[in-house]
Amino acid sequence: MDGVPTPARVTVREARDTDEARILEIGNALFPDYPETLDEFREFRARLEEGGYASILAVAETQTGEVIGYSHAHDMPGQFDPARYRMGIFTDLAWRGRGTGSALYSHMRGVLAARGALVLESFARETMPEAIRFLAHRGFRETMRTWEVRLDLGWFDPSPFAYYLDHARGEGVTIVTLEDELRRDPGALRRAYELHNAVVAGIPMPIPYTPVPFEVYVRSTIESPRALPGAYFLALAGGDYVGEANLHRPAQGTHLYHGVTGVLPAYRGRGIAWALKLATIAYGRQHGYSEIRTWNETNNTGMLAINERLGFTRQPAWITFEAALDPGEAR
Image 1 (cartoon, rainbow, N blue to C red):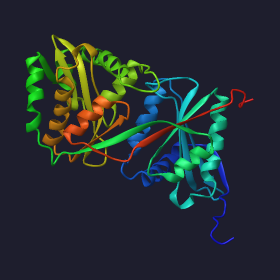
Image 2 (cartoon, one colour):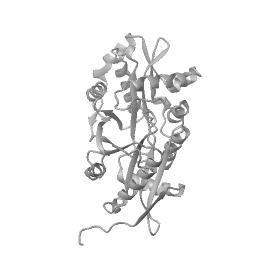
Image 3 (cartoon, rainbow, N blue to C red):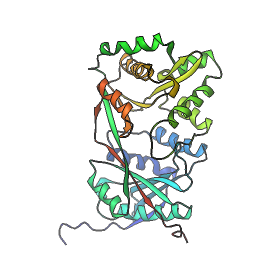
Image 4 (cartoon, rainbow, N blue to C red):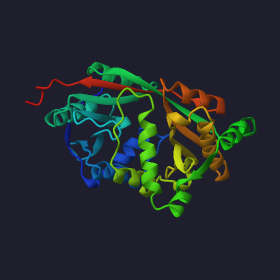
C-alpha cells in the first residue's frame, strides 16, 4: 500500500566490539546535542562492568548485515536494584516505523526477564512524541520529569552574587578543588567519596540512593575521559568536606556538564551551595567554555531556584518511564 513502510526484516543479536562504531553513529545522529566518542562509550560500559553492574548491548541487523538499531540495558549505579534495569531502544532514522524498535524491545525484554527483572525503566525527551507513544503502547507510565537547564557563560555577570561568596567565607568555609586536595592529602579521595555518598543521599529522588563502589567513583572522578579534578569543587569547613559541586568535560563541544551540587544538612543556609555553583561558573569562564548544562528533577525545588536565579534557562524536559514485568514471564 502506498505510504505504508515495508516492515524491516531484521535479526537481533548480542552486540560485538566491531559494532561499536556503528552504534555510536546511530546514537549521535539521534542525539546531536549530546555527541559521544568511542572512548567515552567504552569507558561508561567498563565502569559498569568494573562495579559488578550488568551492561547488555544488542543490535538489529538486516539480511545484508547492516546494523540499523541497538538497545542497551544496564543496572542503575546509585539506584541499584537487581530487579530493575534502565533500557534504551535506538533505531536509525532511515529505518524508523518499520518494526525495528519493536524487535529490539521484544528481544531485550526477554533477556531481562530471564535475568529476574521485575521493572524496566526507560526515557524520552518531551519533544519526542514517537518515543513516548512507543513506550506508552508497551505499558510504560511516567514516573518523573527532569529539567535540563543551560547557562550561557558569555552573558553571565557574577557581580550580583558576590554576597554569597563573602557570606560563605564569613562562615569559615573555603572552596578548594579535589585536584589540589589530592596533592595535599593522600586520603582526600576517600573523604570526597564519603561526602559524595552523603550529599547524593539527600537529593530528592523517587528511588533511594545506593552508594557505588569506591573503585567506580574513582574511575568516574579521576580516570574517565570526561573527568576534571580541577573542576571538582569541595567546601572545606574546620578541616571537613561539607559540600561539593563538579563539572565534566565532553570530548566534543565547547560546553561543560555539571554533576552534583550538595551540602551536608548541618551546613545548609550558609551560602555554601551558592559559593560552589559560582566556583563552577568561574572555572568555565576562565577556561573559555561557552555553556554549562545540568539536569534537575522537578521536585528538587531548592536547586532549581538557585539555577534560575543564576540565569540557567530551561530546555525541554526528559521524562522517565517504567513498566512492570510479570514475575513468571521468563518461564
